[in-house]
Amino acid sequence: MGKTELYSLYKGFLDCICLCLSRGNDEAAAVNERDTENGHLIYKSGDILEDRYEIVDTLGEGTFGKVVQCLDHGRGGSQVALKIIKNLEKYREAAKLEVNVLEKISEKDPHNKHHCVQMLDWFNYYGHVCISFELLSLSTFDFLKANNFLPYPINQIRRMAHQICHAVRFLHDNKLTHTDLKPENILFVNSDYSLVYNAEKKCNERRINDTTVRLVDFGSATFDHEHHSAVISTRHYRAPEVILELGWSHPCDVWSIGCILFEYYEGFTLFQTHDNKEHLAMMERIQGPIPQRMIQRSRKQRYFHRGRLDWNECSKAGRYVKAKCKPLRKYLLSHGTEHHQFFDLLERMLEYEPSKRISLSSALRHPFFLPLVHPGRSHVWRNSCDMSR
Image (cartoon, rainbow, N blue to C red; front, top):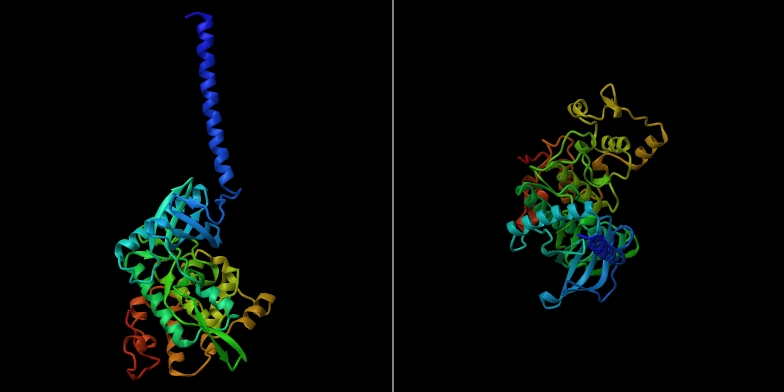
């Protein structure tokens, strides 16, 4: 082969490489034009994804990405919620795990009887995992906020609590722990309300018309056989065994439910803190001393001194906890039987020892829920009633 032919061949090879690089750069540029710097998909109302999902509005935003309201033209134009995950590897991987959980839920609950949000479809859109769901309404937190944090009535808490316990028991029965239960992750199916005058507060308050709820956000849900991260749950709903790094399982969800139900009842968070030791001090103020067995086994010995929480009640933080927290029963808003039943259930959910904490199967048999199981039936209830696990 002569020099001229060699040169021609070499030049052709270089041109080919340049063309490939150019195409790669064009594709990367196209992706960059589609996404924001932090990986969100850039979209506007009227955009159509996959020739099917027409974006109507943005419903919410989180660290994972955004949730948008869409018309699903593959389902006759019905309205759905579409979760659009950021175009970043760690969020894509997490989304695939969530899809796996949602597929398991759909398989085990084909008729949508267990109060968990239903996944309708999922697909990959230029690096964004997109998951479509039934369209729901306001979260129980957003409704509370819009109602100036006025508590939910006890009869509505009963109906909401029963559904939440039922949904999470369904997960536990299928070897799943949700790990991120909070009022933001419990959504009303319909958040229409009536205005009712509150004579005590001397103002109108919103009263939800339909208490039907769905449990959402399975992005952190963990199967029993999977790796269990050391830290789980949003701070205010985090169980003591998680803070003390003692390992965790289904009972950590029960603790979170107890915190959620307290919030519905009072209108404010039970553990308003961002510090582990302060969090433990709040627990002790509300539920009494942390059991010695848990302290001895904890990997967080720096929180303790001579077997007790290393806490100065006279410090600024100590005064804050003393002012903010009191023994659980002192939060009773009424001395009616149903209120005492409710607090008995809370105490069992907020039991320190995970092995002694009430299971959700037992919780659903608690006298607090009896009016839902046997409407109108009179019954005798004792504070010392035995709730077998």
